[in-house]
Image (cartoon, rainbow, N blue to C red; front, side, top):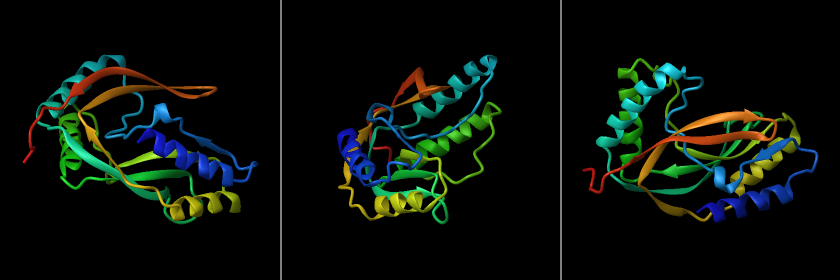
Length: 181
């Protein structure tokens, strides 16, 4: 899956104007965000871990498909190029909702925006015709759907640096084998 996304991004990168200010996600950093928390005080990490553990306990392994190409915002000047995830079983949406509920129980606010499962492949730092062109090309370029298994989720810490963000895994949470029905 990562190789397919990297090939798709390379095709877009080759077609993009060299002056376009765009940062491409490296294949090893591709991820799906279930919940973005921003800054979390060190004393609150234990409460977060409890919430995530409870959310994982009720979740089963499942399969998703990566395919649809899009950009945020959907109209106007694009800022993010993404590939959408299809959740035919509904288990991804259920996991995300359970995570929201458990985090809320620990006094972490719910995300006001609706959950749109996607993998970010690029961030655009320009509002011009070149940005709109690469976003249109991304939407029009066929991405062969890729199906993969989801067997765990992790709490990640993101640290911004001069060369972009670096991720550190704080904890891993295995999903159980089952039908989730």
